[in-house]
Length: 153
Image: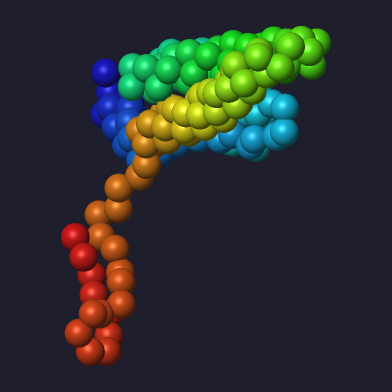
């Protein structure tokens, strides 16, 4: 190897080590019926989002819990529809109390499981994005004592 080849390789290695590759963070925007997922500014499907979550253990754990709570929410919604139908069809006053209890408790289940599912989904995305946070060598902040600025390491 000649000296020029060695210098060229050293310069290429130096430039490639200085170039920082940053991955894009994922985000979620909730709609009325479904959530939309984004990788940077690009819209992605739920299948793509699931594949991204599988790459990180903690994110995948939260994502699976979110899917479990979402399934329980749908089961509670179907149960509520059954109790509501029973309440409408059955004209026996003795059964009215049981049907009302069923409707209200299944409604509570739908709300609770939906909120838990959304919370776990947000935790999964936050956990996935946390590995892309950049740590600064120093930060400049306003001084807490008097006037001026402070450099924190």
